[in-house]
Image (cartoon, rainbow, N blue to C red):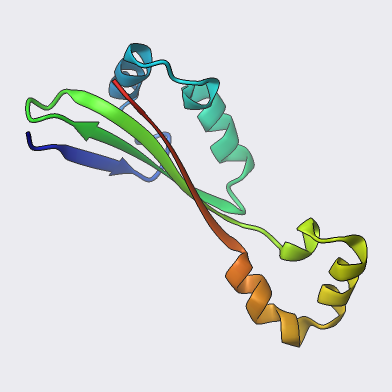
Length: 112
């Protein structure tokens, strides 16, 4: 069985009917709701990128969907207060570590 897929780089470009078809036929969580996803994309546009992927079977019927994302975070925000102070006061030494730690990837998917 051959599968194909489409990647959409915005919720606005996503084929909502196909996304809803997969969501309705699976036990998808609230996180797959397009209203939630649109709000998330809008509120995090400065620090995150999202891609929406729909997988099709050989007949062109959507059978799975997923979201991939990257987010930029500052490791100092997640650190103990004292460690965060040290990180912020030694920017040259920590800049490489902070930039490498800033890119996180996550995915979640649903199938029909």
